[in-house]
Length: 330
Image 1: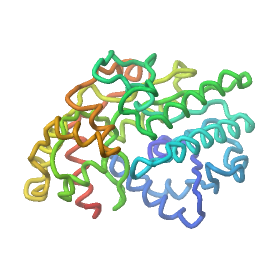
Image 2 (image 1 turned 30 degrees about the horizontal axis):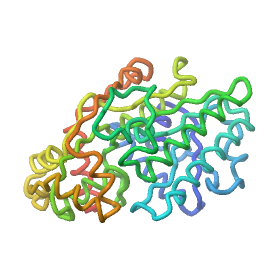
Image 3 (image 1 turned 180 degrees about the vertical axis):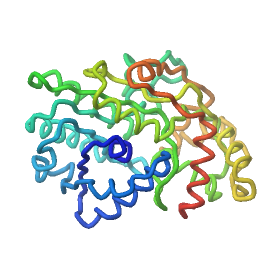
Image 4 (image 1 turned 60 degrees about the vertical axis):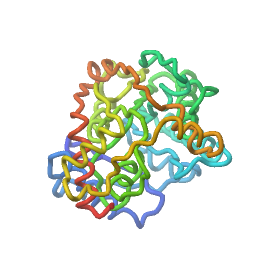
């Protein structure tokens, strides 16, 4: 939203409660600062509509007069649910509700935030080179409820687009492991790993690799996807050309933050121990499937069509940790 406002676009966002409008405005202003620009009075022009992904009410009003829609919301569980449908069902239903409302309102393009989770999981130790033709193997190892929800919701979206009327365009963005400066004390997504490291809440470091991408670069890709002519009807993996292991992330935090990163773990947990735990601890199974490997990911389409120029991974991690300390997230 901050980047679109800075470009002079008229932006309307949905909230589930009208009482959160001022909090959202303040967060958008901070997002602008984190991206290097001041929004000033522009943020006061941010429009709001009240709607919920699980309810039809409010979506017609939210879409009225819009040329493009960014569908970014999806349930993210704090822990793996006993019933995967607790995550999968609302993700799919919410996506189809937004797409249906957008088509009914005459919106010309919807940009959907999917995930690399819909691209590159379930392959075990035999990893191919991942590009936009790749799809997660839902029956494969290490596929969480969240990963399944993103995969199925995106597949539903493409089926909807194939049956939609003329003039309706869908774009799906599949960000890799998203990190970046926080806007307040709350933390979600990949940033939770950084928060737990800084808080000393991790017993050690797993032999895992993360294809880091900065949330600000992901936001820029969304803004570009609204108007790039070549983007229509296509998927894009949004990520950088470098990844980091958990040990490298920890080392970057210690180097960048010094004494403030004193609780960041240094001990490494052996792979055999994680695999043994996975036999009895369901939450460990997803980790076990990702141990010890890296993934070759082709991001050239997003670079070429959307102008993606990803920040260095270490810069992103350092700025993420610093922002958490400054915003009271740790």
